[in-house]
Image (cartoon, rainbow, N blue to C red; front, side):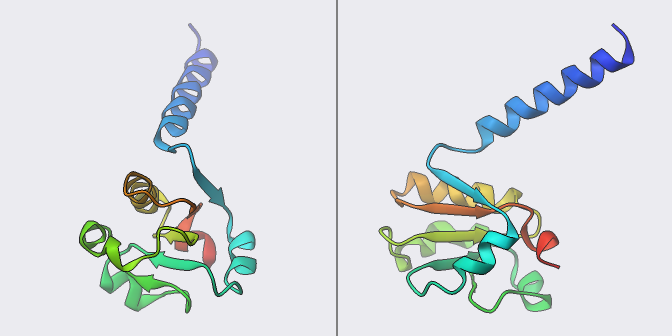
Length: 119
């Protein structure tokens, strides 16, 4: 196998991992789509970064619930309203989205690229 075949194989494996990480029923949006959703007062917005990260930069509509605290604070959220989840890059928010899905939330939206994409 040549170098190009290994690259293609590697990218294929990454794609499969990415597909399995994203649970069914969890929508992915980009920042431009989020900006429209911020206007909707029915939406819930959760930032799962640490309090220090949140304090450095945050989006006004988002409430800070660090990922490690989310299991204990999930009851404060409405399972029947859309929940938008963001972190720094999209990995912690993906984990949070899966947790919310397991807890019975109906509509979960992960912000792809996280705060890195917001800037």
